[in-house]
Length: 144
Image (tube, rainbow, N blue to C red; front, side, top):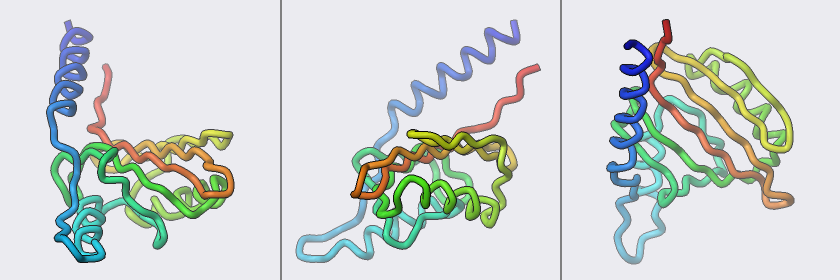
């Protein structure tokens, strides 16, 4: 029965996530988008985002904001995959995230926990153009 409840909760969360609107910037015609990008970056306030990284708002998904957000932040980074791995491995603890496990490979994965949430950072190299980074934050569920 508890497995059924857990499975139903996960399916419900997936459905709820699918119904959410993607993150968008508040940008007016003729502006450079700096203010809109700041609004979006502040929505993901408890994860590090390197100075030259850009948030792909079309592929990102935000539920709530600030220190309690859930969803997915998709970044285009100028850092190569090795530098991005080192950046997140050293920077996430500065935002009070505790490392659970890391795997460094062609597509690297780092997992962290903080209070009642878990974060997974997936880093995929983009050759000489840097890397693509997907940070997924979801509620932590304890299975008994």
